[in-house]
Length: 215
Ligand SMILES: N[C@@H](CCC(=O)N[C@@H](CS)C(=O)NCC(=O)O)C(=O)O
Image (tube, rainbow, N blue to C red; front, side, top):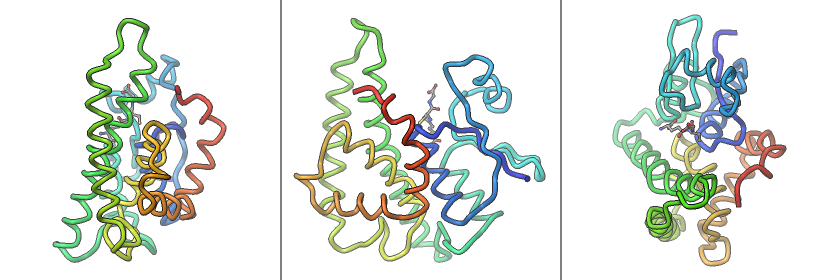
């Protein structure tokens, strides 16, 4: 098999890449990385010293592809399937990329800040940064709520890269800054994402690890 994905099932950015792979039934070898184990982490940093996952290794093409969005662009180009995760039309594709950035930068990133701060030792937490992230997350969720009534998926009727980004970002955002009661349209969108077989599979595989999310 040509493709290997270095990942952990609990990671939101890894779930984003997994959703894209599952959406088009792209075969790959799963390389599960435990970042707390130096040897396991070393398998990732040997290919990508930055040490962040997901990381795709295409052995046949001799390509190491980091960054979830870039992985999805790569899959779209070299391993296309029934769901075009980027539209052919350039304007529509730019809209997908914009919403993908929105979910990464203004939902996933602040959500991660809130979660990872809980892992810091007592006395080294960043209360100011966490409050900023909460505020950013609330603004983003308000924007999604205002936007969603007119759409099934992030950019309209077609499931795209932006939905791959939205699914794990919103799933974990709801754990740290619950919105299901206050933001019904966003909650309904998250329910659609969770019912989508590709994300449902990624979430099911994360199931055994979900208790490790710090609360
Ligand atoms: N910009 C990267 C972010 C990837 C990322 O932050 N991954 C997290 C897991 S969700 C990670 O590798 N964390 C490990 C670390 O920071 O040491 C992407 O879009 O793929």
